[in-house]
Length: 214
Length: 214
DNA sequence: TAAATGTCTTATGTCGACATTATAGCATGA
DNA sequence: TCATGCTATAATGTCGACATAAGACATTTA
Image (cartoon, rainbow over all chains, first blue to last red; front, side):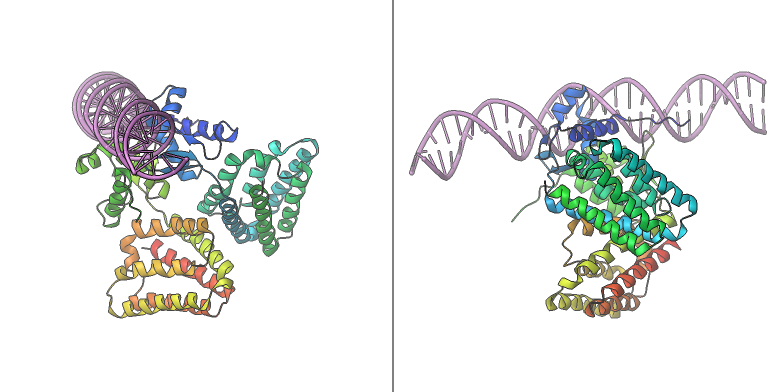
């Protein structure tokens, strides 16, 4: 077993992400190093590194000599980010769909089944979040371009599911969420690359617009 | 006039980029904070921040407790990065080509003309580098998705033109370089989005393969 | 001889402190 | 009343120092 040595910085970054997700830190709020340092009883150095990490992730904005704030997303930011995510994911799936085995298809079916199950019992989308991750990861299971996968995630998932966590939870009814993904899966089963691309682009656009408009 | 207050960190990042470009730091070389700090006569703090910035840019790799190294690109890294850049740029142009005015076309013609001029006199591609930037920026002049533009750059330009600077200079003969771009421009003048997309994908693929294979 | 152990050196991660810069509140003057 | 400038406060950017961990080398052991 490979045990990972976690540095303070990365732990702090995780803590701040959590604080943003559950609303302790809200969009536009200033993030002050001394405060966090006192709260966690550590020095400012690891805090600074964590904030820099979050800045490059797009969760935090930084202005030299003026400090850092939780990123304030404009509607355009949201739409643009989802468009980029959609472009990359759609291209990645379309390019690799030819390599899918029957097993690969089966894995996707399993995710969709789990989504439908969750759709029947859940009251909001919180249970759907990891299923959604699994769904999109499964779509890219045959995509060998790791960089594409990373950048697709970075572009929209990271931002939206942290900064807009609460909005995200109310995007769709749970059954509606499951059905939207099932529809995309159908196009995959049919190995219709063009249709998958179009549906993914539409899917992300719909989510982007719904998140932007609240 | 808006004067920028540059912090040490960003200046250091720029210096290190330069050191990588001109070969003072080579792929795989360890980058040691104390050395740089002594060389620049400053403390380690700004150096660390600069290295973190470069890490997120993809120029440097970091392993906790073991230090940082200039990123060692595999052939696959290069190909993948160029693919992502191509996907984004191609989509960005294709989506915005409908909005191009005659002025926009004229701007592209000007770049191509300058490239041809440079192609006649230059002995290597060093003079082409900024023309290349201008060309691709012009292709995206009507793309309103800023994030797409940023990520396209981040994905391949930053990496290849710093880490593989010297290889890049010998990719093509200067006239050949100009003509390749002129050919893409022709498809733009014709407003043939599909063809522009295909040509850009091919263009980036060709560059990726050439850089990877040396 | 090769493997294992111990020692020494260097670099990293973290700390506390300082100077500089931005911000808010108040005072001053038109 | 509003604009301007000053003051006080607090946060940032940078510094030098230290403990710990990694890597190199020498030493022991089998």
